[in-house]
Length: 431
Image (cartoon, rainbow, N blue to C red; front, side, top):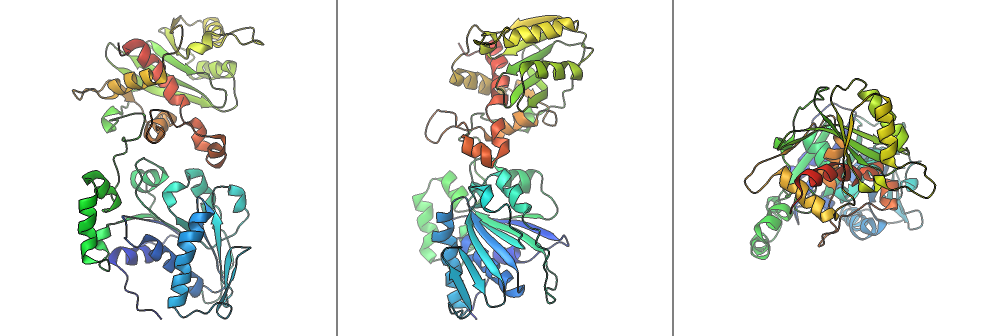
């Protein structure tokens, strides 16, 4: 047996402080904080403790598992005195370690859900957990359903554990472990400095090498400045409001006409501020269905409806008898609403809309003029937290079809922001 001595955060990683049947834990740490070493050790201990168990180790891409995590498992096996083909076997084709006690550990890439959707597992380890999508995370939780338990499986718990570097955006780890943690969800933040086995000069050399922000994130393991690469800057809790719909105030209907999903936002406005109080986001739909849903939600509005949005809604396609805005106008007038349109003849460049939106979120004097009911507008909030620029550019990073396939939520990126930014640019454009 190796003479391992766990650091305090590593010991917390191993131990479960609650009585729930499932433990979900993320070990977030800086360089050299022992993340992968600790994760692979825990996986090996589970395979030893529960004979006949089945675990899986995954990462966004298999090459990361192969070159990092799998090597760490082999290192632990050697240190424990395990001899290949005597105490365990490794099948390169199936990418699987099999132990004499019947336990198995699978190693897989997680970029394609088809590769793991039929598995029944007892535990799962995720290398660089922040790189996978929230959809993949939810899919993995659904794999923890193997009902086999040996007679000596005392105090068995299903476990999903991962390790990662901090990320500069509010991804699923931040949402699930910081903003809305469940009682059985644990986030451990480990500083590089906590690893007492590192050379004495190591920490000091990193201080000299990195700027303060990079050091704080990648050495101390703390969360980053989430607005650094995001489209929307300086949005804080001060931009949230409990604003509700008022049937006696003008209702601003803000439209984006993407078909899947189609995203509209509803708002009130005064001379200085815009208040988003509701949203409509429907997949695989059309303008007629959306305006019918709008009327269902607001059947007795007393004031006028002001329609804003994508200028292309005024263009008629080759096979269409009516434009999008003609459909909206006809439906609202047939219902007895007073309708007014506030539209540009053409859409401004997206960077103009982004600049106008950010200036209303918070200007140089710290004044805020955009407010959102976060409970009623979850997809708009999702865009504010996640819509980003491609690294090193001013190009909005629109999700690819492959990304959307693996993470359904990604299909809602960009379109709610577009719907929100059209009226802001119309009323408060930057000259």
